[in-house]
Length: 230
Ligand SMILES: C[S@@+](CC[C@H](N)C(=O)[O-])C[C@H]1O[C@@H](n2cnc3c(N)ncnc32)[C@H](O)[C@@H]1O
Image 1 (cartoon, rainbow, N blue to C red):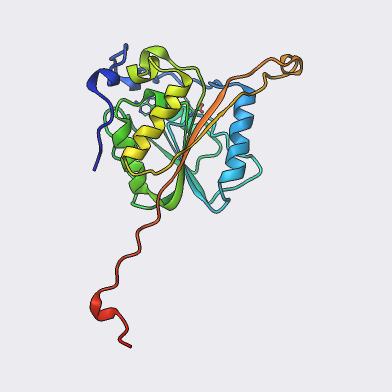
Image 2: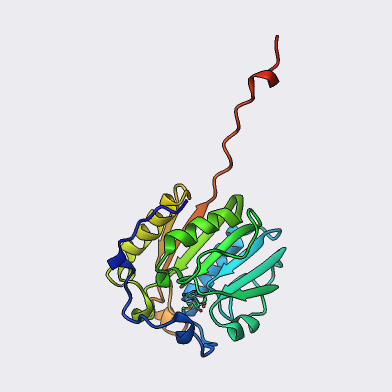
């Protein structure tokens, strides 16, 4: 069941055109600076076990995973097939517009970790996406939503364009909690600009992440006839 959090006005974005058209031209560029990317890769190293089946949702040609760790499988999703084809970390991938269809073509409880980097800010139906992610993630599996303070402004819904960094963290957490991802962890950190400016104390893209875990199923009550009689 999907629990609605946003109003229709909050889903509104300036560019109402098809997202697929906006992403039709491959962008083989980094959307986030080196400091952000290094912090993200360190988080993945810390949180993702190598045996994990990983889903990089809203991906591109990079997945930011530690280059020395092989995961059980890395599945990619995005809007541009050429970008995904160029991503060396992906074992397989598919293209799907999540603002048109939020049902993921993945089996129930088939993924250990979902990563969304600089993507959540473009979701107009984040509740339905978060609800379907709860379906595809295994119990105790995790979802890591990372972002900075940049966006394609015209493609981000009003809930994002009107909010501060702090609002964005609270908003992602609110949607996740409403769909059954309890107690998300919020991370907000400064990063250092790439050298040589970083050596002089210049800051890089700020790092924000929301990390949530799928709850384990409640232990089912034993039927009366199965209880031991003593
Ligand atoms: C700023 S890029 C981030 C790409 C990648 N995650 C990274 O770390 O560089 C935003 C990505 O969000 C995805 N995206 C945006 N709108 C989307 C939509 N309506 N449906 C599915 N994916 C979308 C696209 O895959 C796009 O590459």
